[in-house]
Length: 267
Length: 282
Ligand SMILES: Nc1ncnc2c1ncn2[C@@H]1O[C@H](COP(=O)(O)OP(=O)(O)O)[C@@H](O)[C@H]1O
Ligand SMILES: [Mg+2]
Image 1 (tube, protein in one colour):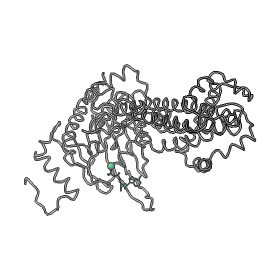
Image 2 (cartoon, rainbow over the protein chains, first blue to last red):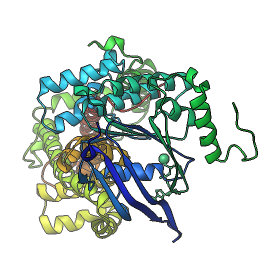
Image 3 (cartoon, each protein chain N blue to C red):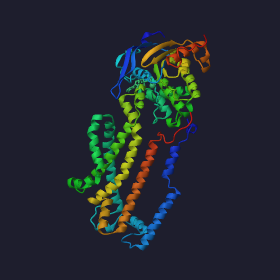
Image 4 (cartoon, each protein chain N blue to C red):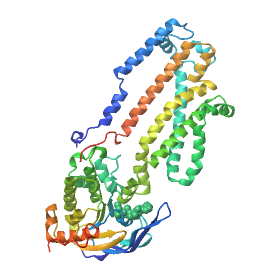
């Protein structure tokens, strides 16, 4: 697992935007960090702190203003199937049936009909959507659409998966169900190798349940790099364990939700 | 995999089949119209307002051959022959117009520079009543097929250009990004994203263009042509044959309605994926 070539290396990465009124915004400011292969990393921070901007640059959909990104030993210049993205907005193609959506990336890369159908059905089963394989996306709920998107990126075999607040708009129960689905898929990676997951969220508890490592952002800067050692899978119950309680306290502090004067719980 | 397990049934399909089927109230409306027409025809002389049954009988008797009309030296004396000529022109104009307008609309939606050149031209043609062009086209191209087809083609181009352009603008950028991250080449993005995503609005534009094309074609034949339903109406108007005019109009109306129904059905089949009923639940 400690194969440095497989890591994602981010060096002095910045991105500035010029708004319509001529003001310059620094969405991401001089970020340097290495994300190890197979790591499950959560990016946490309040809205507007640059999470989506970072993800888009990692995906190759947005050029950086300065700095470098290297993934699997190569600089990131354009989007590619080795880096899969689950977008914040629903991106499942409405004009393709569910099964064709899941197969689409494989089809683009010339995988044979039988093989891609088999892979797609496997991942649809893993996310619990076998019975709607032939349905149109308009017939699915928001949570089901996210399952389709997850099945698609996993079926497509990307080594690096990026998810941008994928469950932000879902209800509590659906969200926790999808955490299980995602962790389950991540834990038994194909060929015994786990994929690298970069998961953006503004929900502190979600990050604590999912992450090996939490990177905290504030106004375009990384302000904290926390390792979470508690074994996975974790559930909402585990949030009361001391390690997670302590991390939670720090995260909330960074978000300005706990005043420094307040006592630290459990000590 | 069966569709019976789908969580929500297709509400859109039901609505379209309902729209295609005549409901009793529509029949009642048509019946009422015929009744008023019949009554009025009893009161007025037949040269002013012919009775509906007579019109239908005339349509049937002159459908395949119309000796009356051959007096006027028409090449295609029957109603069927004239209608075919008109329909051919409409079809030709639709094909040429669509082939020109769809790519142009899609390209200008993405290429600001080309759009800056094309848009003002289209807007000018779009705001001037298109029939104004008829005399010029007659001067340039004569009374043959070309004048009428060109006039209708201009109209189709304006309508479909706007529809195609708007369709391309309305695609959420996330679809193209998503396709690229799945490994789609630019050509695959065009084939699998841009075209299917714009089809519903483009087909809608084509349907509107088709509905307008019949009238425009007939009027342009009226203004100067040697064949077609419009020409027949012009000739019969000269002979103050109200019944004949009504029969020709009835045929034109029937054909246009049937074509519109077919277009609606085809659009429905091709855009089954499109959301027509909001989905509730998680
Ligand atoms: N295309 C853009 N044009 C101008 N400003 C932008 C653009 N995209 C993002 N920004 C700005 O960059 C900052 C970070 O945005 P974003 O990465 O979307 O934040 P987050 O995903 O953390 O909510 C915000 O201040 C936002 O207004
Ligand atoms: Mg965001």
